[in-house]
Image (spheres, helix red, strand yellow):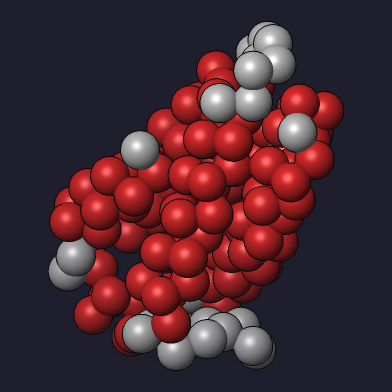
Length: 140
């Protein structure tokens, strides 16, 4: 599921990396080729985490619902930032996404610790993406 979301999102924003390359970026901004690599790894980790929760045999409560909602937020962030150029709105959207990822991580951890651990790199990367998003807003 997360790989499908990521693939569709990248297809909808595929021409955006040229525009992204022309923007002034904050210190520590990675090269553009790194983003698809990192996101692919993160989507695989998210998929494994959600699969572990789904097949844990334990009550999942709202964990998978929150997980699904954060995937929707993840999908729309790149459209808001790249396609629509709504830099500050995208940053606020990213803050909400970060909170949803944190909640998902906690809920997954409560169900199955390894599933929660698998979400941590995603949370850290979105933290870094927030830094980049806000930096780009301020510099451009």
